[in-house]
Image 1 (tube, rainbow, N blue to C red):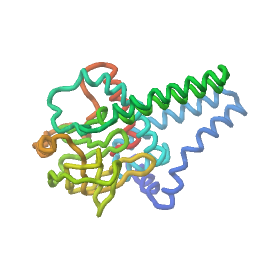
Image 2: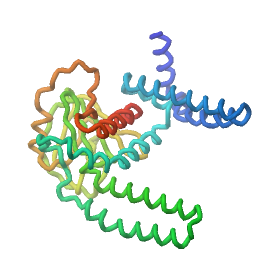
Image 3: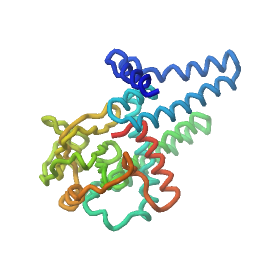
Image 4: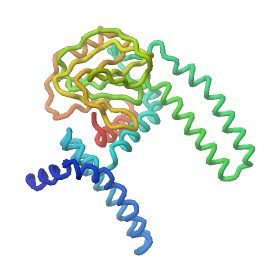
Length: 307
């Protein structure tokens, strides 16, 4: 089974095939609708459920393969840009539950992992919430309770959840340094998974940027928060920096923000612990069952789009 599978993956990695495989996922839903139309709804549902089962299996295989081979398999599930959008959207929408439930599970050894000092997320959220809520109420009353009114209210409720998830994203998603892997963030939108064994050097250098978000500069990727970065990592192997609506960027140099750069550097440069696992499960934490469920959901997200 190994050789035929390897040959199939090599074929999927060919440039011409790569352009086609990214859109293969659009065939399942029409096939399910056609089957439901011609053979009855239960057959169409069976096709959709079968697609779901195949997706889970393919995601597990992609997570295990990793790298370009994993990408070749993940493309069968969804186009890379849609995966990037779905990952960022899931992070924003689950930010508030993580923040509220995660407080009880946090330990005191988080020095250097925070990077939100000086951000204005809470102030922005408090300023815009009354505006969005008032607009939702006025439109709902003007539309007099018809379905459009409820649809408008649902959109406004989604906007509020998205707003608070985005502005409080830096607090919800601090950096994480595990025994073998570090997950470095810039809010809910940008994320890079760094195997600690690939770290060549880590240095402290504060640098201002013209804007936040992701910046590319001479082969380096900067993830500024509040318009600055403090910690620079040089890596022996390229890592992928995830971003919304675009495919990941590969780089050997990553710059991130930290409220305590020296403490973060100490954690990153600490000896790498031995582990029997072939991949760190950084998302699994002790504590509340609901928080654990959120972390498992995060692991499922990473199966579709690992760093």
